[in-house]
Image 1 (cartoon, rainbow, N blue to C red):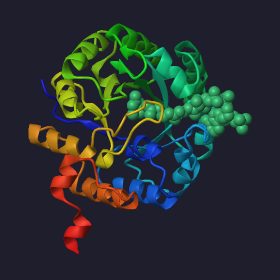
Image 2: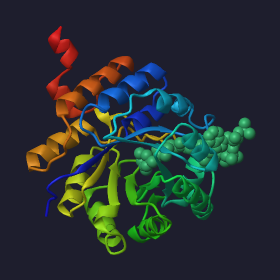
Image 3: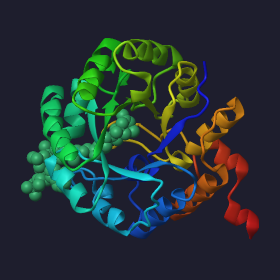
Image 4: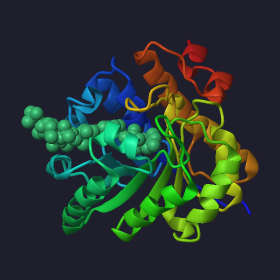
Length: 302
Ligand code: HMG
Ligand code: MG
């Protein structure tokens, strides 16, 4: 049965912009401020990762210090280790996310350690975050397909998801990092996951590289999942997953949900405006089909 409402987690300023080189600090701040006016309740605003690994996120400290925070919005950040968490604390970040993988090879490529080493690292990150009253989200990459290892079984993914949950992550976001999964794989993964995790602790995070994201989201919705990650304008990708293009577009998810009678609480027009604005700064067009159908509100006005 479809849920009555969904929580959208906007990952564009992090998952989207981590793959873009030509973004200024001002562009990032303008984007987050605009998104903050849309009704979104959760915006992933940056990542405290190594600037040598992902230079695009090096300014996250400044981003968090300079945005106009809306009290109704959670602004979270990725923190792979204690060094990242300490930076987050220093900037007053209230919620963080750790990010692991169901695939050994992807884990090595993305965070330079094995799955078991990553879990050990996360334990200390989660413990310190909790001391600071922070909620911790857990991401799991390559839950169905890995760019290096191919198909990942639901059992492999659920094993790590369960560990992250047991360690204290309030929600596990199941990622299709390279966007190759199809609804049958989503169904198997969620069937297994929901035997071990409560539904409210499960989110889905689909990249649209192979054009399957909306179909996969529909599959997840029919299974009662009501937290969906998406990125304005369909920005996105992962520098350590070759070929991983944009996340599913927030505009497209809102359109789908609204027409299914599922409330998002987010204004499509504001997201569309934010998407065209950041794309103008990036000198490209949105990937979102809905944004293209609606058109650029600035160009339409002038
Ligand atoms: P490492 O090189 O193994 O770490 O990186 P290290 O501890 O040996 O440190 C090396 C250097 O980095 C040192 O500096 C540290 O101080 C510095 P040096 O002594 O050489 O001058 N360093 C840091 N600096 C700032 N902030 C930090 C930090 N940590 C170390 N937090 C590490 C290990 C995890 C840090 C690195 O591999 C890394 O940053 N990886 C992040 C990769 C990343 O951001 N990937 C994209 C996000 S994940 C994603 O997109 C998937 C997701 O969307 C879900 C999905 O789609 O599946 C979430
Ligand atoms: Mg991602």
